[in-house]
Image (tube, rainbow, N blue to C red; front, side, top):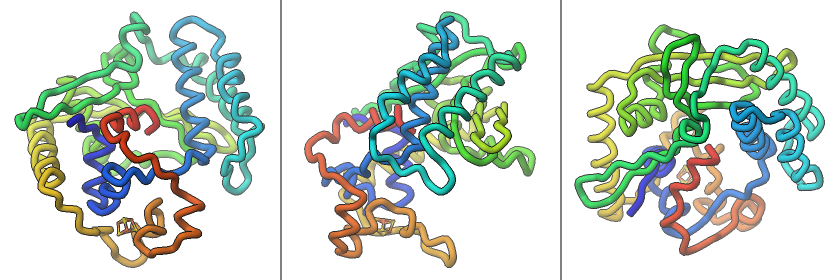
Length: 267
Ligand code: SF4
């Protein structure tokens, strides 16, 4: 079996949801405009570091979805996302704080780690490069609101960064957050992960996989009013037996669970 961060985090969020997605093949329909745009924007960033015209690449990638019926959310549109993306790319070039040497080698790196039970854990790292002259493992994010910057040390608890540090052996990690708001902004959030956090994460991976392989998939949404995790779960229709809700948000692709580590490319 091949496991990824997305799989482990989905199991920890709700084991039943994991079963729906990875064993039964229920997948969320790919209609969220922000997510699709995020992928186009990352292609433009790769073009930027390869010395190509990144705004042209953004337009070309995003143009492919101009007629696709996507969920844009309140106040957003195809044009607005494009405009925000171009603004952010210009700002990124002007600020010029990041260097990626050998972009062919240091962007979208695939890393794999063998696990004691014979399985493999695979991760795709967005970039390894310098921010303000210091080397970091970098994860790009596009979002419509700022990431919280406090209290001090908060970012070092980010489970995805801990996972990437564990698999890569790189302890200095950063999120570069492209905030698509009225006045676009780029956050350069840096932190360090400790050896202890990495060894704890390794143990978490092993114990999670042993529960998965033992077939433990009890529903566990972490409900606590008003943060009912079920309300934002794409599998809610399955748990409620609500077919119209299933039809509106899910599609079933059985038999592809071996390729699910590829989901990480879409996170
Ligand atoms: S709706 Fe709730 S209980 Fe059902 S899979 Fe989603 S999070 Fe789990």
